[in-house]
Image 1 (cartoon, rainbow, N blue to C red):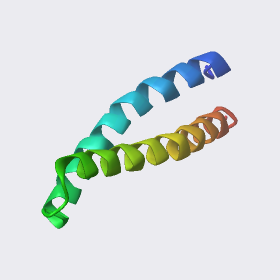
Image 2 (cartoon, rainbow, N blue to C red):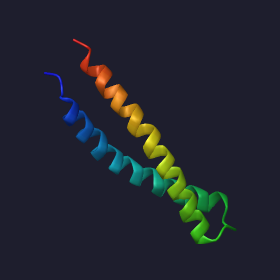
Image 3 (cartoon, one colour):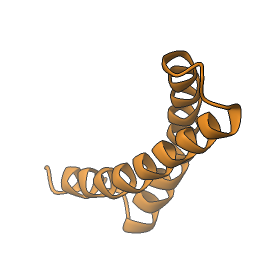
Length: 73
């Protein structure tokens, strides 16, 4: 049985919430290790920017991927 569009949207949003958190945490620690001279607020801002860009791009791509899979019989 194929998922409805609303179910695909709900799955997309809940997965992105989990994934964005992971991306931001990894970005924060990675940037902090690469640039220990950066002030803490700059590392946080960079992690948030990376996380937000990642979220919007992957949210759209996951939805397309999910809808394409509903076409497979």
